[in-house]
Image 1: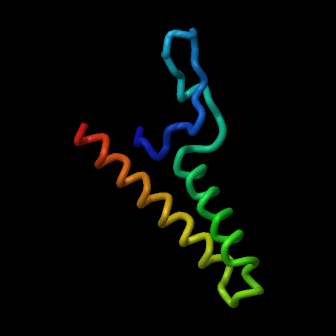
Image 2: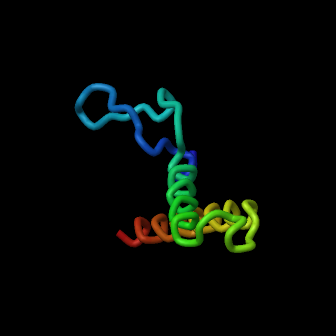
Length: 80
């Protein structure tokens, strides 16, 4: 499973740092990052109708930012 598809908030099974991503339903890391980027986009630019961009443009930008962040984090983790 790719890092982007892992749960944003996994459930710890036994208190010893063992997680069960398959037992968790909810947002993936990618979805959570995209949600926060979308929130920032709207907060900065206002609603789509106010500034002449489409909702699809805002959503695509949020997804691209989330994917870029995940890729950068994976490269950083590989160097360590």
